[in-house]
Each structure stands twice: as structure tokens, then as C-alpha cells.
Image 1 (cartoon, rainbow, N blue to C red):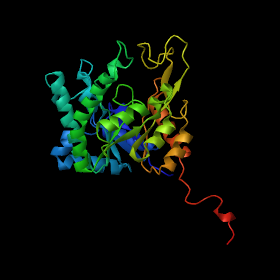
Image 2 (tube, one colour):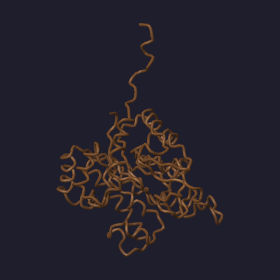
Image 3 (spheres, rainbow, N blue to C red):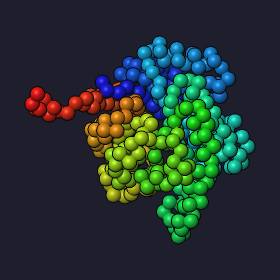
Image 4 (cartoon, rainbow, N blue to C red):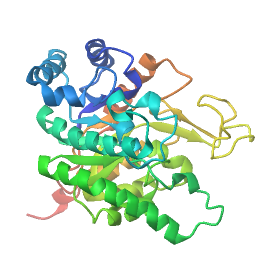
Length: 333
């Protein structure tokens, strides 16, 4: 096996970590990417308590599991978003506060800074997550949207995230944005623009998740090669598209995941349309040696069945890069 295969616990936060760890080992995983919700990883508890960090590590070690990253997507989303009632259920009370939008954004920014500190204390080098966006709502560009309007959105992102990234730098931790619709970066071009907005801050990189790119028509292998020195984590998640009944397009038609009319939907790893072999080749080419972290989402499949087959699929698919040219033995000595 070339890389550890881990499971992102975001979709399993209803289970206590003690139960989740035992189940993950049984399903064939080498480690967990811990979500910062449920009881899986609490940023403030990690900062306050040495025993909290020690006990989390001991629990993972008991089950033979490692942790290479923690994910704080829900808090990161609130840093730049236009806050509304949808955010309240996914934010902890100390971040939501009185719900005043600017107050929520500022408290979320502080929590992301604290996430870098907690990650350092826990001994991981990567935090994955979202950034939110003040301009996503205008994505379709009508009423007519000027580049100056987009520029303001990227400037807002830069102003809010540079201080966060500076704390990541001081803690020697990387932030990997899951390039994703609703974020400041959702394809290659917008990620390039986001990098410019934070002055190419070395702590701002990519949590690659091809499932959010394929149905958009974004070349996820090109993305790997474009940001070769900034791939900080990889999510293995599959998707198919073009499979609906023609009544729903790429924007989703306000339907729920699992609706048979959808143009695209997430699939258990290996059962969709993502070319994971091309991804492995590209990751080998850029010498990525971090985890392959399964983010399992498939509305039509039992999650234990799906996560188990996904772990096996990733381990079967992955391979080490070559240490020598295949034709080196042809040369005369």
C-alpha cells in the first residue's frame, strides 16, 4: 500500500468516536480524518485540556488508527458567507452567538485560528475545510455582474482569511480548501484568483475532492497538476452525472440528494464516473504521499456497506510510484 486510507468522519458524527473508531477499523481503514463536530474533535476542549488531546490519541491508537488531518468545514463556511437561518443549526452556540451576521463571521474566523492551534497541539499538519463566499449567490451573473463586483468578493475573502492563514503559519499547519460550489473557489480559475487574494499564502492549499469537479466539467487531473505544491489532502469521493430523467439540470432543480430526477449525485467510491486511476497517477507524479481520505456519501446505499467497499477499492487501486525507469535495464553496462 502506497498511502494510508482514512475515513473522514463528517457523515458519521451521529456516532460517538469510540464506536466510530472500532467500526472504521473493522471496515478496513488505517486512520480517521476527524470532523470538528459531534464528539469527534472539539477545538476548544483540545486547547483547554491536555487530557482531552491525550485521550483522543489513545482512543485512535487502541484501534490501530492514525490521524493526519482534522476537518472544520462548518465553521469555515461562516467566515465569508452571507449569514442566514441555515447556518444556525450547523454552528456551535459560541460561534452563532446572537446571530448578528458580522459577529458570526468574526467569531468563525477566530474559531478557525483556534483550529490551527488545536491541530498543532493534536499533532496534525493539515486542517481541511471551507471558506464560505460573499459572492456565490451571484454566481449566475444576473442582474449583470461586473468583474469589479467579483473583485470585491475576493478582496473580502482575502481580508478575512489572511489573518487566519497567518496563525496557520505560526503553528506550522496547512489549510486545505475543499474546492466546492458555495466556496470562494469552486474550479481552477477561481482557485487561482483566491490564491492571488491571499498573496499566494503558502498555508492556503487544496483538499482535493473530485466529486465536486467532475459534474461541473472541471478537469480534476489538471487541477492536481496546476496546484501540485498545494495538494494538502485528498478526499476520495465519487459522483455520476447525466443520469437523471432530463427534468433536472446541473443546478439541481431544488431537489434533494437521492432524487432519481437529479442530473448528478454522489456515489460510493468506484461506482461513479470519476477516473480515480488517473488521479493516482497524477498524485504519484507530484509525489503526494498523504492520505487518501474517503468521504463517503451515497444516498442510496447503506453506509457501512459503502464505506467498507470504498476502503477496499482505494487500497486495491493505489500503488507506489516507480523508483526507476522501466527501461533502465536495457542500457549496456
